[in-house]
Amino acid sequence: MRYRIATYNIHRCIGRDGMRNSDRIAAVLHEINADIVALQEVSSHFEPAGDMLAYLAAAVDMESIEGVTLNAAGARYGNALLSRLPVSAVNRINISVKGREPRGVIEAVFNLNNHTTKLWATHLGLGVRERHMQVKKLLKTIHAEDTDIGILLGDFNEWLTWSRPLRALHRWFTAPQSTPQVPATFPSRRPLLRLDRIWIRPGEKLTALRAHSTELSRIASDHLPLVAEIII
Image 1 (tube, rainbow, N blue to C red):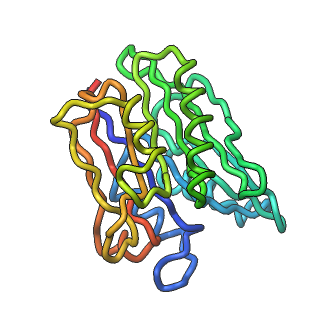
Image 2: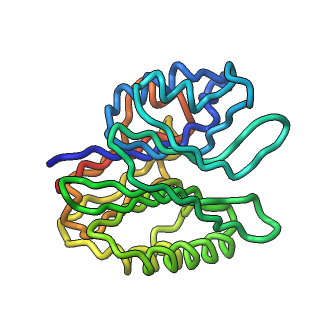
């Protein structure tokens, strides 16, 4: 079976024009039409009218899983998952580094075509040493898991293609030579940096990888969505 998976840093629904507009993000999600979407920089106020994640989930008719990393000024902030597929288990993992902004991972378990599939969605920090420590924590978790298929995705904030954290992740998610090249997703207007990533193990399950670049996605956030097609 074919599945579509995406990761999207929605920048609190603030577009390149400086306007906060959840409708634009919802419209981009409709364009992508994915089965599972990992979101970063989701900011929701506690009152129902300000619940950004609930609004987006309802707009695209998907179930939501929240991965809050910060509670401040009456608002929740962090990662999230949207899914059209049933989730059998969820775990939230703290990969924060002391003195830096709190960071976390959403671990979700799916049964995709009778294959146990574990997905890890995250958003790494801005510091080089910080990201190195976070990847070590992340890989320790992944190594301990017994699963048929593993999917890691999110905003990894890595500018250099062969940085130590990326090399460590590449070694675990070893892929065949036919694996699609990772496209640039940031900044959205004219992407130069490959900050957003999707890895799948075994690598041959990944058949296509693209940045979703449309007139709307180029203004709705400062990142373009990254979309993967997989066959299981």
